[in-house]
Amino acid sequence: MQLKKSVQDALNAQINNELAASYSYLEMAIWFEARTLPGFAAWFYAQSDEEKLHAQKFIDHVIKRDGEVKLSSIRAAGHSFQSVAGVIKTALAQEEAVSADILNLHALAAKEGDIGTRNLLEWFVTEQEEEEDTFRTLRDDLEAIGEDGWKLLEYDKRLTRPAPADTGAA
Ligand SMILES: [Fe+2]
Ligand SMILES: [Fe+2]
Image 1 (cartoon, rainbow, N blue to C red):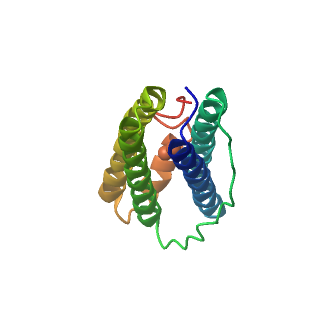
Image 2 (cartoon, helix red, strand yellow; image 1 turned 120 degrees about the vertical axis):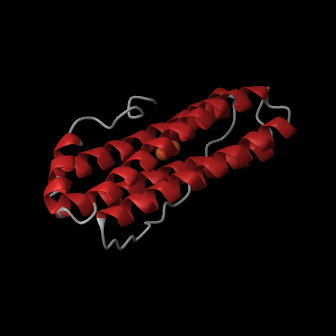
Image 3 (tube, helix red, strand yellow; image 1 turned 180 degrees about the horizontal axis):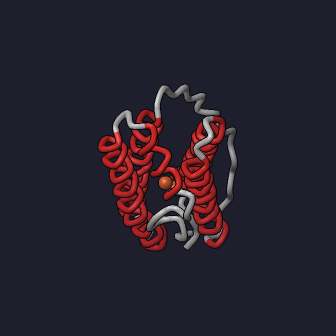
């Protein structure tokens, strides 16, 4: 079944959303890199890579279904952060916004009777639940650390390992 125009347009918009999320995480990674927090930087670079894989997943789906991929410009988020906690708060809000996009897309695919697209989106619903959970954990950890610089450095060392739980998922 070829993609309906409405579904194709929404998928193309989501490709842009995922790439914008990737770009936004890249900004966050650079922010950490500039503040010599290499663990956080590595962790956010990994998040940025992961969002690019998400975009690719949608691209592959559109092509497989004989649709047309249309890329559009990605705007830089232009973040200006005051604190590590501020970055995490923004990242969590970003994931929550993407979750809402995915759920809207899922509703559209269901309305259009597009089961294949719905199946793909169900993978993304689970993925978003994991992503939100990961960022909430990070937020809670940072709340516990508070203003303690030494604890923050210790935490940064732990994050040099690959991001927990969700980085491997393509
Ligand atoms: Fe994503
Ligand atoms: Fe994400």
